[in-house]
Amino acid sequence: MTRDDRRSAPNIYKTRIFPKYKSYTLRNFRNISQIRANFSEAELFEMEVVGNVLPFKANNYVVDELIDWDKAAADPIFRLTFPQKNMLRPEHYDMMASTLKRTSSKSEIASVANIIREELNPNPAGQKDFNVPVFNGRPLSGVQHKYRQTVLFFPSQSQTCHAYCTFCFRWPQFTASQDLKFASKEIDTVIEYIKSDPSITDLLITGGDPMVMKPKLFEHYIDEILKANPPNLTNIRIGTKSLAYWPYKFTTDEDSGLLLRSFEKIINSGRHLSFMAHFNHYAELSTDVVRLAIKRIQQTGAEIRTQSPLFKFINDDPKVWSRMWNEQVRLGCIPYYMFIARHTGAQHYFKVDLERAWNIFRKAYQDCSGLARTVRGPVMSCNPGKVQVLGVTEINNEKVFALRFLQGRNEDWVHRPFFAGYDAGAAWINNLKPAFGADKFFYEDELSAIYKEKIAVLSNH
Ligand SMILES: *Cc1c(COP(=O)(O)O)cnc(C)c1O
Image 1 (cartoon, rainbow, N blue to C red):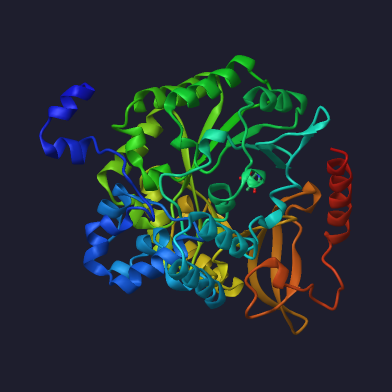
Image 2: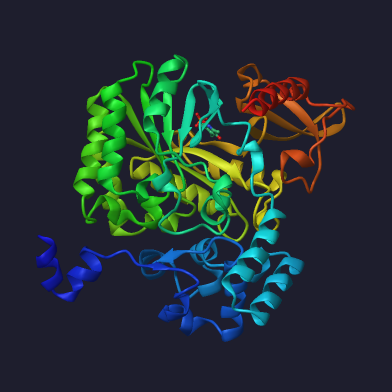
């Protein structure tokens, strides 16, 4: 079917088989009929207040296919994509609400938004500075390299998503000024960097969402990489929410065939392609189109691995996770990580304490066969590394958290169990203190030394 055929096709073909992407933002969300039917003007204003600070973008697939509007405000996918009043602390909420009542000046609203955002810890886990490698005497923008084997590349064309998650920790990339953006047009530099370090095996293309970019552009990146053919680069990963937010990318969108052929090129070069799919809830696996998209991707030879953070109101229930993991396994996907909510943005709203996170994880894990137990969690992706909460236990009458690194800035830390004092309210590593009266965790001196060295290198540039 050509594009012109599509235009003259009956309506059902336009809306169901070749849906056209339509985004909903603050500018037009009041036009969504389901929104008008379910919310009062006061509630719409609340969404507007929060949406001026935190990222807000939904689309026609999310609104028409994923959200169960009978549940409206209580629906997990609604909470995942639409702003809610309590996502802002009262003082921040009032500050933006009074600004909106006072003025319609875009620049004034934006400057108030920026003041609030600055107070929301916009760059957690040292993303901004400590992960940027220095290469040939200059920091590589658009690249992060924290763990030896894996380099992250943020193409400048992937600094957005098909819809925004209300909990997103990468929100500075969507909203803030240039210096918070890790953007790069320079795939050549990335390739040179990969070639220069034989211990790099994985390139993780991420964003935002790299599956937002045009397939032709994605093909260009892949062609450049494959032409350079770095012998150490054996795995390419794509970090993306597109299967959940816009699966048509792999079925009926223009050039979806070209995109899938780019995946095949990676496989045919003798490399592994891992599609790191972000799914937060089994509802996102329930439509015919997402199942077809999964199949199409798998037919290229790629594997799909899945990951998600754990959030109150969205998926803080072991049944949601076991159903999601079991469904993923059935669809041939490999569960990979369960993350704990980072201390950024609306964390106060979404956070689940560490003990409860562990209980949710283990109950869900117990409810799956070994095929889903490839998943690791719950994990904090924090400054020193990826720290897994192994559980709460008692040693010498002291109640403690048992923890371990799954990834570390120093790889020697990985898989060394360590202990923190029990704290019922702790929701992130910075709430924890070492157990047994120790004054610091085993890695802290080495971590300070690593930072000192990074700061010295970066301050030379
Ligand atoms: C999570 C992460 C990776 C990938 O880690 P894997 O355990 O190999 O999946 C790479 N770089 C950074 C900065 C990360 O946070």
